[in-house]
Picture 1 (cartoon, rainbow, N blue to C red):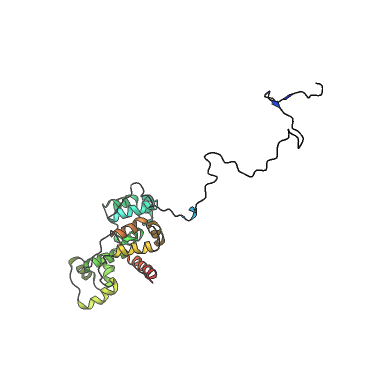
Picture 2 (cartoon, one colour):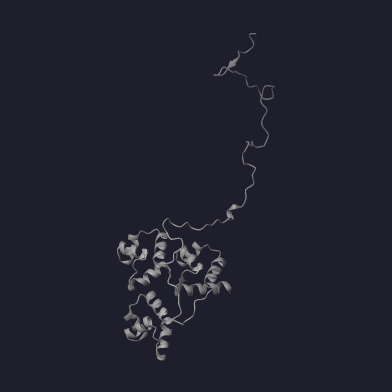
Length: 252
């Protein structure tokens, strides 16, 4: 009995065996298995799918308080302002007016002055006034977009202010010698194409862009592209020319 080693215990009082020499019955077998331990419920063996090429897109949520489908100039102005995250006081400073004036514009209580109308329309990105083909309507639309007074408009047409006023407000027809200048200033009198919304939608889809992405490429807001495609708002002439060039490149 004296040759037996005393029983050893760990701190928990459990018996421990003495590690034997290699090759003995008490020595542990070396681990040669290459199998991985897979825990229940793990996804170790789940194959990876190529999600890196998946493109998710969704329309940008409308800011709270922003008009869903703006119709008037004031509603378009508010929608564009809120899309850009601007306060009324911030945008008012850009136009050189106070916040109360901008509020009245957005509420439709007053309209921007003639000298500011061109800047307001450029900020919105479109002219929400329905397009018409009559000469008085074309004169008013042009003067509004350019921010011209009646006198400045008459000077551009090469006539007296009262003559231009009679054309615009009384519907008086110009004499034959004035039509060449009128067509040069206003451009040819062409009716608004009824398929313009479909053409815009066609261009955007051919490019594989969302309304927000297409608007960003043109420097406009998503609501402006949406209004174009619904036929609620007419693109400005400079935007119309830009769209025509894009369409020609796509169809070529």
